[in-house]
Length: 610
Image (cartoon, rainbow, N blue to C red; front, side):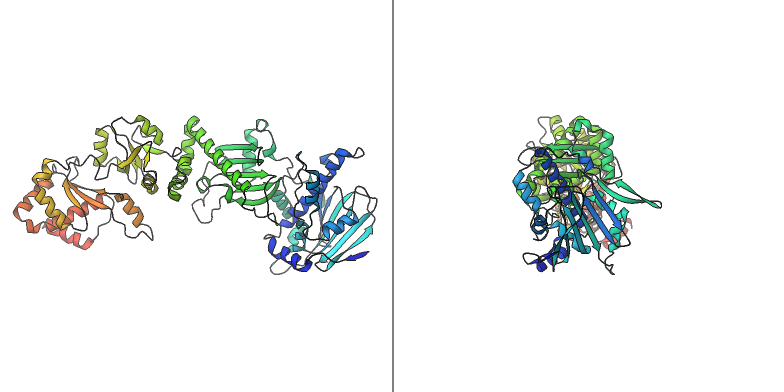
């Protein structure tokens, strides 16, 4: 037996690795399985040049067993094994990676990719074990050796008898504490869950001793062949749906799936899904976007949010690549050009799929948009409209044209040449919008009107400004053609309107006649960039800032009330104030705005009734 000290600043480095590099203790099993897979890969490469070796991937299983009596967990492989010098070189020097060296030497490109790169994963086992024993026999040696250590103080290497080529790692688990239950790593069901989570697509069988009644049975836990590496033409819709549900992306059936296989500057495979239903927490702080990220079939990150833009955060799925640069713990990706390139390609793939759905399967797209369209709208509005090119042609609005959903492109295509604007109306519902006097006038003029029933809708127009050189205009704006600013009524009663404007100083900027108000005696419109709906939306926010639209009070000269108002002005102009106040507040109520001074309003109503 030979006694050795760890090289480098072993105590400090090992302590840092155990307590800082890995944020989740269960990661240790992923690392040991990945090392076993690497060793088996090396055996495969050896068999390509060694005629005495035959390689059958299914025969090179990775075996995991537990012994609750001795509190040990054992991981065995039939890979290439390690010699005495390799044990000392690979396990005696923290951050020395035999896998990385092998990968650099072979420059393997045939699909059997070496997973390990940093040489620290093995030591993650010290997070759960207070003693580790490694028995290994190299393929070129008849002698096996045992490497054993209790941590940073050093290790021993001892010759042992072992008939089989390969490596067996035995972890003696730590005693339980109030904070940690290490017994969970002796439970077969818990181990199975960890393997399925991180190592389900390791290409070799992972066999686990599972309890079956009074006996134990060896069970192959992992799937081995990733669905995303298969030829899409050979995968059925049922297989795609089963994968979606097995990975718990959702309990529904996906509306669409995207099977992406890219070879080029950076190679990767991806399975992306558009869900049918919205997650219950989608618009909550708890919702976390992102795709599962694999490197060579090993799960590195459960939620890689950097792979999806916020406006496509509803997409579920995974990405697998052999070309990504990882940090030392293989838990977090470095922000590099490779990752950005994958993210850009995925964004374009999702956009392309949605465009295809919109064009060829309108019914399914409408169903999707009713579920997730709000997210696309927010994406269009956020970041000052910088994503307009990605999203503006994916947005739908309900329209007065047959009451259906339309795109902006479809609206503009149907416009008459002389129509100057894209017209819209805001309201809490389509029924409410269709009751507006302005809507009746727009319909009479033959204008198609978009129904804006969500708060975000009108804000989108402020970001877009125009579409295909056509600007947006609300039919509820004072600038809409409903207003008759040069009408005879405005000229004939200019003194009345001026007096009402004076009485309502600070509340409205203008009072005028509008002969198109149908049976409504009064109405409010707005001038400028802030509409009445925007005022309501902004002031409903905690930091709304008391935003005020520039209001215009419009009176219907054809309504009987107007004649009463004219008579009162001519007979008792000093008593016009309660009329002005009641009409103004009536107009506010019709627009869904609150009454500014309820007590004064009640008193004025009582005075008029009296």
